Structure formats: structure tokens, C-alpha cells
Image 1 (cartoon, one colour):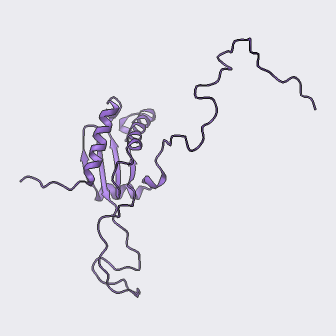
Image 2 (spheres, helix red, strand yellow):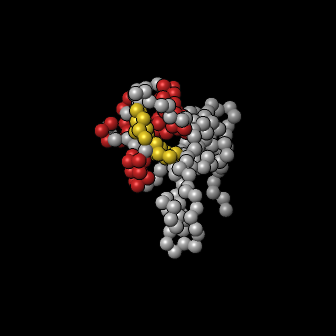
Image 3 (cartoon, helix red, strand yellow):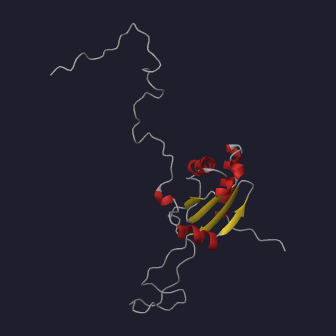
Length: 186
């Protein structure tokens, strides 16, 4: 079956900007070479109850561009394990066990959530603030500590601030979370 002439490129004719190949080769990159721009779902706070728990029980840190709420991920005891009072759960065959430690294991990845209030502007403004904050996290994810649930509330100043300043400020706050608390002066 013949469908007509097939287009062939002419070597002597100049190429128009419409038919020119796109920068980057024009072909999609392989999945292993693509840059992942989002946080893995295991690294995100997903439910409203998780955010509320961090707000209510976590510590708060202020800076010129961010307010950071952080809560250590305490291991959740299994229903058949003992209660914190040392008495076994009724109906369990196990006797009293030592209480679960309050710090999570170092293998538990920290989870992040970013909330941007409607007071900061329209959706395009809020999304830009969110993207800039997420990019700071993405670039420094390997350096951040494990075992925390963290909610970041950026301020409107994130829009105009230099990116390097945002990186230094936010990463500094997150690194201080895993550092031991300094005694307060009286």
C-alpha cells in the first residue's frame, strides 16, 4: 500500500527554527539519568493528622524566612506489646518488657511537609514559595538527619530572598534539630 511520498531532508536547504532539533537532543532521557524533582512519598507527610500532631507536639523554630515545626518520630508500639506504665496489655501472652525508646532508629527517614498560607498570595505566588522551599530540601536531602517529622511554613520573604540565603537558613535549622540542646541561661 502506497501512502504517497515520504519526506526526505535536503542537505542543501537551511533548516528552519520550527524543524530544528530542540536543545538537549529532542529525545527523552533515560529514567536513570533524569533528575527527580519531587520528594519520595516515604519522605512526605501525607495526612492532616500527621501535620496536626507535629504542630501540637513538636518544637518550633523561627527564622527570618521560615517557621519550622519538628517532632521526633517515636516508634509506635505494637498493640500486643506493653503499655508505657509497664503493665502488659490485657489478653497478651507477653510479660512486661522494657519501654520503647523515645528516639527513632537511625534508618527511619525524616518526613517533610510544606504549608503555605493563603495570606501569602494567590496560587501562583504560593506555588513558587513551595517550589523554592522544596528545592532546598531536595538538594540537601542526604545531609539531613533521620527520624523526624518536619513541617515547614515559609514566609513571604522567600520570594525575594537569594536562594543561597534560603539554603543556609533552612538547612541550618534542620541540622540543629539533631544536635543536642544547649542549656538555657537563667
